[in-house]
Length: 310
Image 1 (spheres, rainbow, N blue to C red):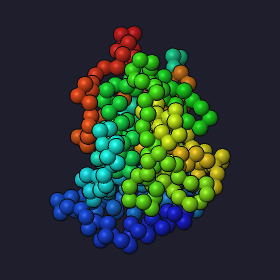
Image 2: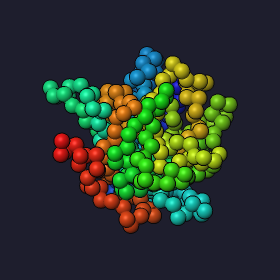
Image 3: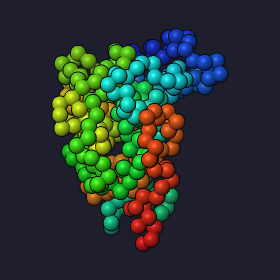
Image 4: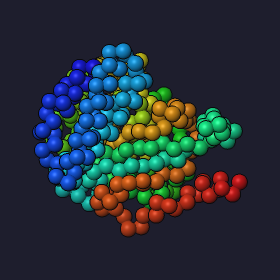
């Protein structure tokens, strides 16, 4: 992984002019600031990789991916490719969006003390990447707008936190095409997993990061669930070839937790805890084909309203 970081650093540092060439003049200063931030993050990651500090490396990768996504926004205000025509009517995200997941511990449990006060509620901030997973990211943002995940009970598996929406909110059999963008390809690949363990391909959005978000598998091969997502809890000690998850390349990864992991909130979540509310913080204007019946972002979740009355 250290060699990959060095290669990325060389691109960001030595191909500066090429990276900034497509940026409009009005955004040039902000884009250069983001490129410099990415260069610094990759420099720090090089040292962290040498020290083999797994937890710091995972956090650094998530921050570098976020900076990369922001640089892509400056480079291309819209998608640089067209989604397949047969998927043209599906919601899609032509950029990135920020989502806040308000989570609450099960009754009688808490996250511990924050600023001197014991709390049972925390926020996970998520960056959703429509540049590399436009259909999956767009579907997720649309679900958030409709309030699909408000009141969702979490279930912890060996490697992930599963988030199946409450019964009655969506059709659990609805599916999306599997969407994975290979690192060396210009656009996502649909309905076909990558051959990562064969050392032939790597995804642009890796699953092998603590706090990555992906949709669960669909009922048919080559599909993903249109509603159930999970937050991956990566452990390098049980990783496969090249330090990657054995499932790498098999799921539609569409974003990452960028706040709440380092604070320890993510690692404390388990079965019985709840997503009280999911809210689009920014980027909703990048959503195409969003439903007209979407709930306002400030709609109060039933679980949150119930808690307020207690």
